[in-house]
Amino acid sequence: MTDLLPTTPYRGTRDLLPQEMSVRQQFFHPLFEVIESYGFGRYDGPILEPVEIYEAKSGEEIANQQLYSLTDRGGRRLALRPEMTPSAARMIARNLGGLHLPVRWYSHVICHRYERPQRGRLREHWQINVDIFGSDSIACEIELFELIHDMMRSLGATEEMWALRVGDRVLLESILRDIVKVPEDRRQEVASLVDRWAKYPREKLAEDAEKMSLTPAQFDLLEETLASGAEVLRAVPDEVAERSQVVRLLNSEARELVTFDPFIVRGLQYYTGTVFEVFDLHPENRRALFGGGRYADLAGLFTKQRIPGIGFGMGDVTLQDFLQTHGLLPKPRPQADAVVIPLGEALLAETRRMAGVLRRAGVRTSTPLEPRKLSKELAAADQLGARVAVVVAEDEWRRDAVLVKDLATREQREVPVAELADRVTAVLRSPAP
Image (cartoon, rainbow, N blue to C red; front, side, top):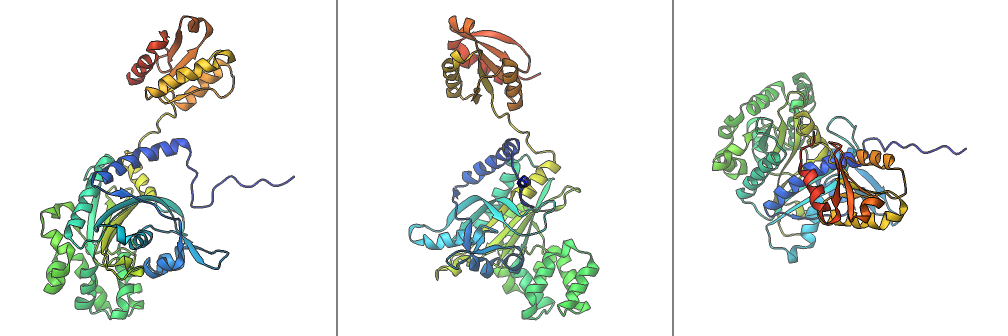
Protein backbone atom coordinates (compact mmCIF):
# COMPACT_ATOMS: atom_id res chain seq x y z
CA MET A 1 0.00 0.00 0.00
CA THR A 2 1.32 3.43 -0.95
CA ASP A 3 2.08 5.70 2.00
CA LEU A 4 -0.21 8.71 2.18
CA LEU A 5 1.26 12.18 2.12
CA PRO A 6 1.04 14.26 5.31
CA THR A 7 -1.87 16.68 5.65
CA THR A 8 -0.03 19.25 7.78
CA PRO A 9 1.16 22.40 5.98
CA TYR A 10 4.84 23.25 5.60
CA ARG A 11 6.26 24.47 8.92
CA GLY A 12 5.69 28.17 9.41
CA THR A 13 2.72 28.32 7.02
CA ARG A 14 -1.00 28.01 7.73
CA ASP A 15 -4.20 26.46 6.49
CA LEU A 16 -6.90 29.13 6.81
CA LEU A 17 -10.35 27.57 7.06
CA PRO A 18 -13.55 29.53 6.30
CA GLN A 19 -14.09 30.49 9.96
CA GLU A 20 -10.54 31.85 10.19
CA MET A 21 -10.87 33.70 6.89
CA SER A 22 -14.09 35.26 8.16
CA VAL A 23 -12.25 36.68 11.17
CA ARG A 24 -9.43 38.02 8.97
CA GLN A 25 -11.82 39.63 6.50
CA GLN A 26 -13.54 41.46 9.34
CA PHE A 27 -10.39 43.16 10.58
CA PHE A 28 -8.68 43.66 7.21
CA HIS A 29 -11.53 45.29 5.29
CA PRO A 30 -11.97 48.22 7.71
CA LEU A 31 -8.23 48.84 7.32
CA PHE A 32 -8.57 48.91 3.53
CA GLU A 33 -11.44 51.37 3.82
CA VAL A 34 -9.42 53.70 6.05
CA ILE A 35 -6.40 53.57 3.72
CA GLU A 36 -8.55 54.29 0.67
CA SER A 37 -10.24 57.18 2.49
CA TYR A 38 -6.84 58.91 2.32
CA GLY A 39 -6.70 58.49 -1.46
CA PHE A 40 -4.36 55.49 -1.68
CA GLY A 41 -4.74 53.21 -4.70
CA ARG A 42 -4.35 49.45 -4.41
CA TYR A 43 -1.75 47.62 -6.51
CA ASP A 44 -0.20 44.16 -6.71
CA GLY A 45 2.87 42.55 -8.23
CA PRO A 46 4.58 39.20 -8.84
CA ILE A 47 5.52 36.94 -5.96
CA LEU A 48 8.80 36.09 -7.79
CA GLU A 49 11.46 38.79 -8.20
CA PRO A 50 15.17 38.78 -9.12
CA VAL A 51 17.31 37.96 -6.08
CA GLU A 52 19.45 41.03 -6.74
CA ILE A 53 16.85 43.57 -5.63
CA TYR A 54 16.81 42.05 -2.14
CA GLU A 55 20.58 41.56 -1.97
CA ALA A 56 21.03 45.23 -2.82
CA LYS A 57 18.47 46.84 -0.56
CA SER A 58 16.78 44.56 1.97
CA GLY A 59 19.70 44.03 4.34
CA GLU A 60 22.04 41.17 5.18
CA GLU A 61 19.60 39.29 7.44
CA ILE A 62 16.96 38.98 4.75
CA ALA A 63 19.30 38.47 1.79
CA ASN A 64 21.64 35.96 3.42
CA GLN A 65 19.49 34.19 6.01
CA GLN A 66 15.77 34.54 5.27
CA LEU A 67 15.41 34.51 1.49
CA TYR A 68 13.64 31.64 -0.29
CA SER A 69 15.61 31.58 -3.53
CA LEU A 70 15.69 29.38 -6.62
CA THR A 71 17.21 29.17 -10.08
CA ASP A 72 14.76 28.75 -12.94
CA ARG A 73 15.33 26.64 -16.05
CA GLY A 74 16.84 29.64 -17.81
CA GLY A 75 19.48 30.04 -15.12
CA ARG A 76 17.88 33.17 -13.62
CA ARG A 77 18.20 33.62 -9.85
CA LEU A 78 14.78 34.36 -8.34
CA ALA A 79 13.31 34.73 -4.87
CA LEU A 80 9.90 34.54 -3.25
CA ARG A 81 9.33 38.10 -2.10
CA PRO A 82 10.15 38.62 1.58
CA GLU A 83 8.72 42.14 1.48
CA MET A 84 6.91 44.37 -1.03
CA THR A 85 8.74 47.71 -1.03
CA PRO A 86 11.48 46.78 -3.56
CA SER A 87 8.80 45.49 -5.95
CA ALA A 88 6.83 48.70 -5.54
CA ALA A 89 9.95 50.74 -6.28
CA ARG A 90 10.57 48.70 -9.43
CA MET A 91 6.99 49.23 -10.56
CA ILE A 92 7.21 52.97 -9.89
CA ALA A 93 10.43 53.21 -11.94
CA ARG A 94 8.94 51.18 -14.79
CA ASN A 95 5.83 53.35 -15.02
CA LEU A 96 7.37 56.77 -14.36
CA GLY A 97 6.20 58.16 -17.70
CA GLY A 98 2.55 57.70 -16.78
CA LEU A 99 2.69 58.76 -13.13
CA HIS A 100 2.23 62.17 -11.56
CA LEU A 101 4.43 62.12 -8.48
CA PRO A 102 3.91 61.97 -5.58
CA VAL A 103 1.73 58.85 -5.61
CA ARG A 104 -0.04 57.02 -2.78
CA TRP A 105 -0.06 53.23 -3.19
CA TYR A 106 -1.04 50.32 -0.96
CA SER A 107 -1.14 46.53 -1.30
CA HIS A 108 -2.12 43.40 0.60
CA VAL A 109 0.26 40.61 -0.38
CA ILE A 110 1.74 37.36 0.84
CA CYS A 111 5.44 37.35 1.80
CA HIS A 112 7.90 34.57 2.68
CA ARG A 113 10.91 34.58 5.00
CA TYR A 114 12.87 31.58 6.21
CA GLU A 115 13.04 32.10 9.97
CA ARG A 116 12.27 30.18 13.13
CA PRO A 117 8.48 30.07 13.62
CA GLN A 118 7.42 31.57 16.95
CA ARG A 119 4.75 33.86 18.39
CA GLY A 120 4.46 36.81 16.03
CA ARG A 121 6.71 35.28 13.35
CA LEU A 122 5.94 32.70 10.68
CA ARG A 123 7.61 31.81 7.40
CA GLU A 124 4.60 33.00 5.44
CA HIS A 125 2.50 36.05 6.25
CA TRP A 126 0.10 38.48 4.67
CA GLN A 127 1.09 42.12 4.84
CA ILE A 128 -0.54 45.48 4.18
CA ASN A 129 1.98 47.85 2.61
CA VAL A 130 1.35 51.59 2.48
CA ASP A 131 3.78 53.91 0.65
CA ILE A 132 4.07 57.46 -0.64
CA PHE A 133 6.56 57.83 -3.50
CA GLY A 134 8.00 61.06 -4.87
CA SER A 135 8.06 63.58 -2.01
CA ASP A 136 10.50 64.76 0.68
CA SER A 137 7.80 66.78 2.46
CA ILE A 138 7.23 66.33 6.19
CA ALA A 139 3.55 66.21 5.22
CA CYS A 140 4.19 62.58 4.17
CA GLU A 141 5.23 61.58 7.68
CA ILE A 142 2.30 63.44 9.22
CA GLU A 143 -0.21 61.85 6.85
CA LEU A 144 1.06 58.32 7.47
CA PHE A 145 1.03 58.82 11.24
CA GLU A 146 -2.52 60.18 11.12
CA LEU A 147 -3.44 57.20 8.93
CA ILE A 148 -1.97 54.74 11.44
CA HIS A 149 -4.01 56.31 14.25
CA ASP A 150 -7.17 55.99 12.16
CA MET A 151 -6.34 52.39 11.21
CA MET A 152 -5.87 51.40 14.84
CA ARG A 153 -9.14 53.13 15.79
CA SER A 154 -10.94 51.16 13.07
CA LEU A 155 -9.84 47.98 14.85
CA GLY A 156 -11.34 49.18 18.13
CA ALA A 157 -7.93 49.90 19.69
CA THR A 158 -7.62 52.83 22.09
CA GLU A 159 -4.45 54.87 22.45
CA GLU A 160 -3.72 53.26 25.82
CA MET A 161 -3.20 49.94 24.05
CA TRP A 162 -0.39 50.93 21.70
CA ALA A 163 2.31 53.50 20.98
CA LEU A 164 3.80 54.93 17.78
CA ARG A 165 7.53 55.36 18.41
CA VAL A 166 9.69 57.31 16.00
CA GLY A 167 13.45 57.42 15.47
CA ASP A 168 15.72 58.87 12.80
CA ARG A 169 18.62 57.34 10.89
CA VAL A 170 20.02 60.85 10.36
CA LEU A 171 20.16 61.46 14.10
CA LEU A 172 21.55 57.97 14.78
CA GLU A 173 24.33 58.46 12.26
CA SER A 174 25.28 61.71 13.99
CA ILE A 175 25.20 60.06 17.43
CA LEU A 176 27.55 57.33 16.25
CA ARG A 177 29.82 59.70 14.29
CA ASP A 178 29.88 62.93 16.30
CA ILE A 179 29.23 61.80 19.88
CA VAL A 180 30.35 58.18 20.30
CA LYS A 181 33.10 58.51 17.62
CA VAL A 182 32.39 55.15 15.98
CA PRO A 183 34.59 54.63 12.88
CA GLU A 184 32.67 54.76 9.60
CA ASP A 185 33.32 51.11 8.77
CA ARG A 186 31.72 50.04 12.09
CA ARG A 187 28.62 52.24 12.10
CA GLN A 188 26.34 49.84 10.24
CA GLU A 189 26.94 46.99 12.67
CA VAL A 190 26.68 49.30 15.69
CA ALA A 191 23.36 50.54 14.30
CA SER A 192 22.28 46.89 14.15
CA LEU A 193 23.29 46.56 17.80
CA VAL A 194 21.04 49.51 18.69
CA ASP A 195 18.22 47.91 16.69
CA ARG A 196 18.22 44.87 18.99
CA TRP A 197 18.85 46.82 22.22
CA ALA A 198 15.52 45.96 23.83
CA LYS A 199 15.81 42.25 23.01
CA TYR A 200 18.97 41.38 24.95
CA PRO A 201 20.38 41.95 28.45
CA ARG A 202 22.96 44.67 28.89
CA GLU A 203 25.78 42.13 29.37
CA LYS A 204 25.11 40.59 25.97
CA LEU A 205 24.96 44.01 24.30
CA ALA A 206 28.25 45.04 25.92
CA GLU A 207 29.86 41.79 24.79
CA ASP A 208 28.69 42.37 21.20
CA ALA A 209 29.86 45.99 21.33
CA GLU A 210 33.33 44.83 22.37
CA LYS A 211 33.44 42.52 19.34
CA MET A 212 32.72 45.61 17.25
CA SER A 213 35.77 47.30 18.77
CA LEU A 214 33.77 49.70 20.94
CA THR A 215 35.50 50.52 24.20
CA PRO A 216 33.53 50.24 27.46
CA ALA A 217 33.52 54.04 27.62
CA GLN A 218 32.04 54.27 24.11
CA PHE A 219 29.39 51.67 24.98
CA ASP A 220 28.42 53.58 28.14
CA LEU A 221 28.27 56.85 26.20
CA LEU A 222 26.11 55.27 23.49
CA GLU A 223 23.71 53.89 26.10
CA GLU A 224 23.55 57.18 27.98
CA THR A 225 22.98 59.21 24.82
CA LEU A 226 20.20 57.00 23.47
CA ALA A 227 18.51 56.75 26.87
CA SER A 228 18.37 60.54 27.15
CA GLY A 229 15.39 60.64 24.76
CA ALA A 230 14.63 64.12 23.50
CA GLU A 231 17.91 65.42 24.98
CA VAL A 232 19.57 63.83 21.94
CA LEU A 233 18.09 66.60 19.82
CA ARG A 234 20.20 69.14 21.69
CA ALA A 235 23.31 66.98 21.62
CA VAL A 236 23.66 66.60 17.85
CA PRO A 237 25.12 69.41 15.69
CA ASP A 238 22.69 72.08 14.46
CA GLU A 239 23.18 71.16 10.80
CA VAL A 240 22.10 67.58 11.60
CA ALA A 241 18.95 68.75 13.39
CA GLU A 242 18.14 70.96 10.39
CA ARG A 243 18.23 67.91 8.06
CA SER A 244 16.05 65.77 10.30
CA GLN A 245 12.43 65.20 9.35
CA VAL A 246 11.79 63.94 12.87
CA VAL A 247 12.98 67.23 14.37
CA ARG A 248 10.58 69.07 12.02
CA LEU A 249 7.81 66.72 13.10
CA LEU A 250 8.50 67.23 16.80
CA ASN A 251 8.42 71.00 16.25
CA SER A 252 5.06 70.84 14.46
CA GLU A 253 1.46 70.61 15.61
CA ALA A 254 1.58 66.89 14.78
CA ARG A 255 4.07 66.05 17.56
CA GLU A 256 1.26 64.52 19.66
CA LEU A 257 0.93 61.72 17.10
CA VAL A 258 4.25 60.10 18.07
CA THR A 259 6.69 59.32 20.86
CA PHE A 260 10.32 60.06 20.03
CA ASP A 261 12.56 57.04 20.70
CA PRO A 262 16.24 57.11 19.60
CA PHE A 263 16.43 53.31 19.93
CA ILE A 264 14.16 52.83 16.89
CA VAL A 265 16.43 51.86 14.00
CA ARG A 266 14.65 49.25 11.79
CA GLY A 267 16.79 46.58 10.20
CA LEU A 268 16.29 47.26 6.49
CA GLN A 269 19.23 48.99 4.83
CA TYR A 270 17.19 51.22 2.52
CA TYR A 271 15.84 53.41 5.33
CA THR A 272 17.70 56.73 5.34
CA GLY A 273 15.73 59.05 7.64
CA THR A 274 12.54 58.71 9.66
CA VAL A 275 11.96 55.21 11.07
CA PHE A 276 9.01 54.16 13.21
CA GLU A 277 7.35 51.22 14.90
CA VAL A 278 3.95 50.60 16.47
CA PHE A 279 4.27 48.82 19.83
CA ASP A 280 1.74 46.80 21.80
CA LEU A 281 1.67 48.12 25.37
CA HIS A 282 -0.10 45.10 26.88
CA PRO A 283 2.19 43.42 29.45
CA GLU A 284 1.51 39.99 27.89
CA ASN A 285 2.49 41.08 24.38
CA ARG A 286 5.04 43.90 24.65
CA ARG A 287 6.52 43.90 21.18
CA ALA A 288 6.66 45.76 17.90
CA LEU A 289 3.55 45.13 15.80
CA PHE A 290 4.63 46.78 12.56
CA GLY A 291 6.74 49.64 11.29
CA GLY A 292 8.35 51.47 8.42
CA GLY A 293 10.41 54.44 7.44
CA ARG A 294 11.69 56.92 4.86
CA TYR A 295 14.01 56.04 2.01
CA ALA A 296 15.86 58.72 0.06
CA ASP A 297 16.04 56.84 -3.24
CA LEU A 298 14.93 53.23 -3.17
CA ALA A 299 14.08 53.32 -6.89
CA GLY A 300 17.72 54.20 -7.64
CA LEU A 301 18.24 50.51 -8.43
CA PHE A 302 16.02 50.96 -11.47
CA THR A 303 16.18 54.60 -12.62
CA LYS A 304 18.54 57.58 -12.52
CA GLN A 305 15.65 59.83 -11.43
CA ARG A 306 15.70 60.30 -7.68
CA ILE A 307 12.41 59.12 -6.14
CA PRO A 308 12.18 59.49 -2.36
CA GLY A 309 9.51 57.71 -0.40
CA ILE A 310 8.13 56.68 2.95
CA GLY A 311 5.96 53.75 3.94
CA PHE A 312 5.18 50.92 6.32
CA GLY A 313 4.22 47.25 6.33
CA MET A 314 1.61 45.75 8.68
CA GLY A 315 1.78 41.96 8.99
CA ASP A 316 -1.22 39.80 9.82
CA VAL A 317 0.50 37.59 12.42
CA THR A 318 1.42 40.30 14.93
CA LEU A 319 -1.80 42.17 14.19
CA GLN A 320 -3.94 39.15 15.03
CA ASP A 321 -1.92 38.55 18.22
CA PHE A 322 -2.57 42.17 19.22
CA LEU A 323 -6.31 41.89 18.64
CA GLN A 324 -6.52 38.61 20.53
CA THR A 325 -4.48 39.94 23.46
CA HIS A 326 -6.78 42.95 23.84
CA GLY A 327 -10.04 41.05 23.30
CA LEU A 328 -10.67 42.80 19.97
CA LEU A 329 -10.62 39.77 17.67
CA PRO A 330 -13.95 39.45 15.82
CA LYS A 331 -15.94 36.25 15.98
CA PRO A 332 -16.42 34.28 12.74
CA ARG A 333 -19.45 35.36 10.75
CA PRO A 334 -22.00 32.70 9.76
CA GLN A 335 -21.24 31.20 6.38
CA ALA A 336 -24.88 31.66 5.38
CA ASP A 337 -27.79 33.66 6.78
CA ALA A 338 -30.48 31.32 5.53
CA VAL A 339 -30.98 27.91 4.00
CA VAL A 340 -33.81 26.93 1.67
CA ILE A 341 -34.72 23.24 1.96
CA PRO A 342 -37.07 21.32 -0.37
CA LEU A 343 -39.18 18.46 0.98
CA GLY A 344 -38.76 16.30 -2.10
CA GLU A 345 -36.81 16.44 -5.35
CA ALA A 346 -39.89 17.64 -7.24
CA LEU A 347 -39.51 21.02 -5.49
CA LEU A 348 -35.86 21.70 -6.45
CA ALA A 349 -36.74 24.33 -9.06
CA GLU A 350 -39.01 26.16 -6.59
CA THR A 351 -36.24 25.97 -3.98
CA ARG A 352 -33.78 27.65 -6.36
CA ARG A 353 -36.34 30.36 -7.09
CA MET A 354 -36.82 31.12 -3.40
CA ALA A 355 -33.08 31.18 -2.83
CA GLY A 356 -32.76 33.67 -5.68
CA VAL A 357 -35.39 35.92 -4.10
CA LEU A 358 -33.45 35.99 -0.84
CA ARG A 359 -30.07 36.55 -2.49
CA ARG A 360 -31.42 39.52 -4.43
CA ALA A 361 -32.57 40.91 -1.07
CA GLY A 362 -29.00 40.68 0.22
CA VAL A 363 -29.47 37.50 2.26
CA ARG A 364 -26.61 34.98 1.98
CA THR A 365 -28.50 31.82 1.14
CA SER A 366 -27.55 28.18 0.75
CA THR A 367 -29.49 25.31 -0.81
CA PRO A 368 -28.90 21.51 -0.65
CA LEU A 369 -26.67 20.02 -3.32
CA GLU A 370 -28.13 16.52 -2.95
CA PRO A 371 -31.35 15.13 -1.42
CA ARG A 372 -31.19 14.49 2.33
CA LYS A 373 -33.61 14.25 5.22
CA LEU A 374 -34.88 17.47 6.76
CA SER A 375 -33.11 16.69 10.06
CA LYS A 376 -29.75 16.42 8.31
CA GLU A 377 -30.33 19.68 6.41
CA LEU A 378 -31.19 21.49 9.63
CA ALA A 379 -28.01 20.11 11.21
CA ALA A 380 -26.05 21.37 8.19
CA ALA A 381 -27.75 24.77 8.55
CA ASP A 382 -26.63 24.92 12.15
CA GLN A 383 -23.06 24.14 11.11
CA LEU A 384 -23.18 27.01 8.60
CA GLY A 385 -24.38 29.31 11.36
CA ALA A 386 -27.61 30.10 9.51
CA ARG A 387 -30.34 31.91 11.47
CA VAL A 388 -33.24 31.01 9.20
CA ALA A 389 -34.49 27.83 7.50
CA VAL A 390 -37.01 28.17 4.69
CA VAL A 391 -38.81 24.90 4.02
CA VAL A 392 -40.47 24.42 0.64
CA ALA A 393 -43.22 21.79 1.13
CA GLU A 394 -45.97 20.61 -1.23
CA ASP A 395 -48.98 21.61 0.88
CA GLU A 396 -47.72 25.15 1.59
CA TRP A 397 -46.49 25.61 -1.97
CA ARG A 398 -49.99 24.90 -3.31
CA ARG A 399 -51.07 27.92 -1.23
CA ASP A 400 -48.17 29.93 -2.72
CA ALA A 401 -46.42 29.91 0.66
CA VAL A 402 -43.38 28.45 2.45
CA LEU A 403 -42.44 27.68 6.05
CA VAL A 404 -39.97 30.08 7.69
CA LYS A 405 -38.24 28.84 10.85
CA ASP A 406 -36.16 31.00 13.17
CA LEU A 407 -33.42 28.56 14.18
CA ALA A 408 -32.51 30.62 17.24
CA THR A 409 -36.00 30.84 18.79
CA ARG A 410 -37.44 27.71 17.09
CA GLU A 411 -40.47 29.80 16.03
CA GLN A 412 -41.97 28.67 12.75
CA ARG A 413 -44.70 30.22 10.62
CA GLU A 414 -46.21 29.94 7.18
CA VAL A 415 -45.28 32.93 5.01
CA PRO A 416 -46.64 33.91 1.57
CA VAL A 417 -43.95 33.76 -1.12
CA ALA A 418 -44.45 37.47 -1.84
CA GLU A 419 -43.51 38.29 1.77
CA LEU A 420 -40.61 35.87 2.09
CA ALA A 421 -37.76 38.37 1.78
CA ASP A 422 -39.34 40.79 4.27
CA ARG A 423 -39.97 38.04 6.81
CA VAL A 424 -36.44 36.58 6.58
CA THR A 425 -34.73 39.98 6.83
CA ALA A 426 -36.93 40.81 9.85
CA VAL A 427 -35.80 37.62 11.58
CA LEU A 428 -32.15 38.36 10.77
CA ARG A 429 -32.47 41.86 12.26
CA SER A 430 -34.08 40.60 15.47
CA PRO A 431 -31.81 39.78 18.42
CA ALA A 432 -31.09 36.14 19.07
CA PRO A 433 -31.95 34.85 22.56
